Image 1 (cartoon, protein in one colour):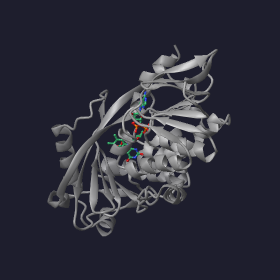
Image 2: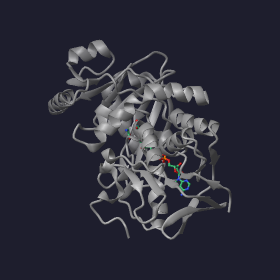
Image 3: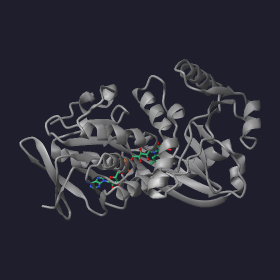
Image 4: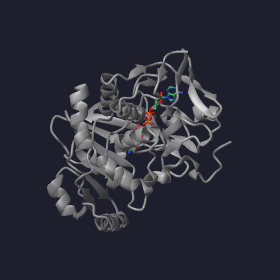
Length: 374
Ligand code: FAD
Ligand code: GLY
């Protein structure tokens, strides 16, 4: 048995990285185990949008959590830069959620009213306003919801900044080590079994993204989760075509630092296959061209795909196994794991320190509509 850690984290994506960083800041001795490369899965496939208002509805239990997490980014950007040297490329130029039909326009106008009533900033832009703000967008747009505070980051750099900062604080990280099972004694976790041996700890946090459920079965937990593939492509431009992120039904355009635009993303449920398909990219090209005709003249860069961790009711799981003390779970962030990563780190570190927050009980493990503990 290897040396004892205060906490072992399974998964080196943005969620595992954020939890490791927060625990390390609290002086904990932490080990991160990643079966592949750090941030090699969903966390580096993400477009990096912080779409708290664009992607979620005000009555969604995730809305408050997401807005709070979004608000953590400016301070986090500085903190991570200081501790790791990595710039997460936070861009705070806002988002336009555009309407292509009158029906979508009416829906967005309602969404604006609801969010304004909740005290958030959002405003309606007419087609003429859009032409002033983003002159190269298609003339056919009916209007847009302008969300000034839905920014964006480099997802891969955020994940890297978390793990590098954690390492600076003494966290040990092992890549290409798969956790295969748990060690327990009388209903208490004592460690994990891996492909390179056993590691002991009285706290184990599973942050394995879409793969979490396979491991959790070993602890008698059958969480309602499924994988949802997303495909993207990127182009390079030699002049800025858009300033804000453009978000529409089935397609978004995210202008990155350095003249890149990320175009995403398909939504293909129930597959762990990360191959990029012709039909997926063809659909995205068609949708992107409808939004931004000038994208046709840009330089092709690359395509990629990632697997989002979805749950039965669309909410993530944050909690401790009811029958195995010290076994924690943080998974199911679906389309918003980058956005939710800062707050997830804090919330899970609180839980490990025995300070669970009742405010977030909507995400508890036993809420599932199906029986989940076998
Ligand atoms: P992952 O990044 O998948 O990391 C989990 C890690 O755990 C993996 O590296 C895996 O190898 C490891 N692991 C699993 N099981 C084991 C084991 N037994 N032993 C050891 N290691 C293990 N979110 C946003 O907020 N904004 C966006 O704009 C956005 N865009 C997206 C676009 C696409 C195309 C996709 C696919 C996702 C997007 N997301 C976005 C969602 C976001 O990427 C995910 O919610 C987030 O990355 C989940 O992070 P994670 O750490 O839980 O999972
Ligand atoms: N949040 C963007 C995506 O999941 O594609």
